[in-house]
Image (cartoon, rainbow, N blue to C red):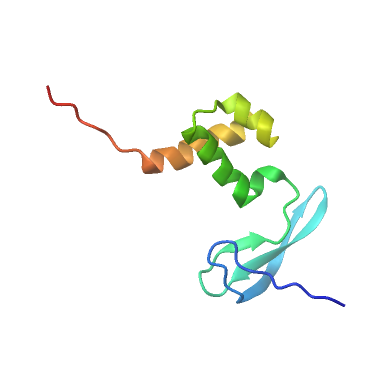
Length: 101
């Protein structure tokens, strides 16, 4: 029987322990926790909007000028997911520019 090593989604550490379950309509999903950084995550997500790589794709597409409806259609996630992620990520990186004339 082959075993796969589960790495932390944040720091890529192998020091991962089991940390309970998430209960949802599709059944219970195993939760994992990293001993190094304390990050809590799932090994397999049932919804694509919860996957970390989808969230980074949303931010990249917004920076490239794609609209919210276009991103939600391409990535097959809801418009609310795109707008919440945009507000969360872009407001954290937002800086004001003063124009002196």
